[in-house]
Image (cartoon, rainbow, N blue to C red; front, side, top):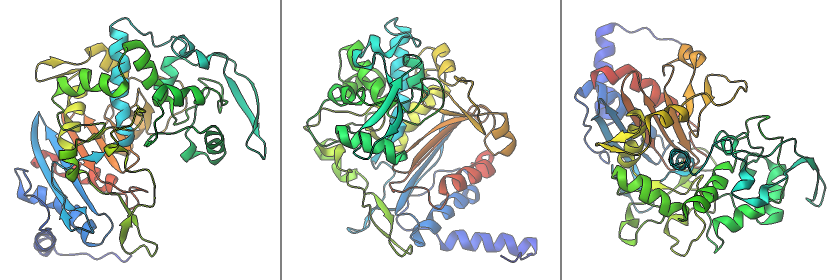
Length: 418
């Protein structure tokens, strides 16, 4: 692309016109204190909606405990022409994992779990795990004994050797053969029944050997159930959602609130428009008969609600004078937990955390941390700026136009003026 050099005054006028022309009638009024700065954010999403790159989005930013930006763009449902609202409900997918990590740490601080306990202490079927050597044509396998047992800490850091089928075709063949669900389920299995099946198949590597993003958090959900005596969704509701006032976060969305559940889209075959996602398992938030609640992916929430969870971590375990987790346990959650090689971030418990290399690349400073989800949801906290940002979409595949990164880059350009 050729570079065009503009006179400064003309550039300012052009930017103002661009922002004004692209204000989408479906979006709510920005709450930012500086109209120019908030308008740059508005323009990012309005442009993406107009170009049919995304169906819609909700963006939400808190700084110093105050909401400095909140806006909704595009459509909750394109076919019905229902505009997005700021309090709409999104499938959070892997952003559920943050709540699971906090749940495990709550049990640790109550003396009910040790992070270096062997998993088989809580789920006996995982005793003496096997490691995959090869998969045969009929999807049976050859395996060898593992060098060690899986620990709770390894589950929390995705170093257990367990995998995810959607990220590994060969591993997926094992899950299919054994009828193992990775979440978003609509049958009558329980979490325990599902994880007992998972325990039968071999690991992809010895525990602690490498980072493999995985179903480890679904396993932790069963640990939480076995230790607490509560079903996973009930434990999280009682010990995290209710204390934090996350009153619009659900594992099964109530019938009277289902109109707010956002539809999921994908780019169409030509790449010029949007169509409903072809991914089949999207109805789980409204299936009332479910007994399997994925600790790795089943939470539904709003931008405002999830920001309360991230703000609690930023506040070192408290929100509105309610302590959810001890300060030291928050520090542990966000500390580097493995000696494995890292790039711009390291792995804490559920969260990715920016390291010095990531700091140099920018714009997030070292110590910032966040969570992301399968259905195109994203959030982070920046302790230096005392800021929480949440960006929620519903697409699969997601972030094909790098809108998360664009949002992040603009936020750091305007945050001091919002």
